[in-house]
Length: 179
Image (cartoon, rainbow, N blue to C red; front, side, top):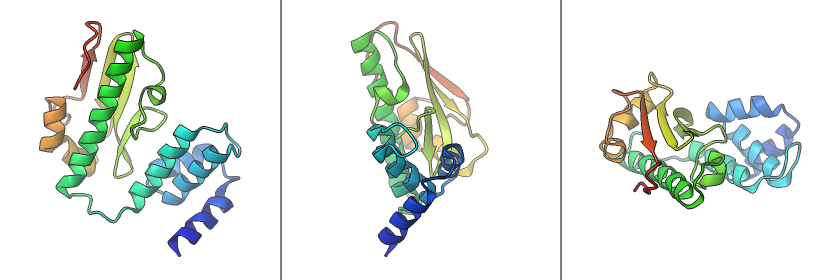
């Protein structure tokens, strides 16, 4: 029944404003995420983009997930996804000698703006410039973000607590792959 309701909502939202749909999705609205996923999968009102479609399908799934959000496995999964993003980007830079759009360098779950979401909240901004990869805390006041940054998994991955430092930089000018 949830699937039929989900599909119905996706079709009824197709003509909505893309920006407001994205804002709603990033705010945790699974219907908006599903609608965007469908739009990008079919090229309805937007350019067809399978990677972006997969991202929004994953967002909808994550929002609907019934796993408790404070579960230790939740921090492990977020740390694993962030680790994949960092290692994919570093491998891309080493192989290509340059950066590209974040979404072209990794298939891990990160939105097109380079924001890494935790419980549907943008907590981390991943950006690149020249040979520098930046990981920045963009939501220092959110409880979920604070919990993730303080988790052993995140501290082990980043070697720092993003609650204490607002930004971490990795310099790839020496062409070393991280992780």
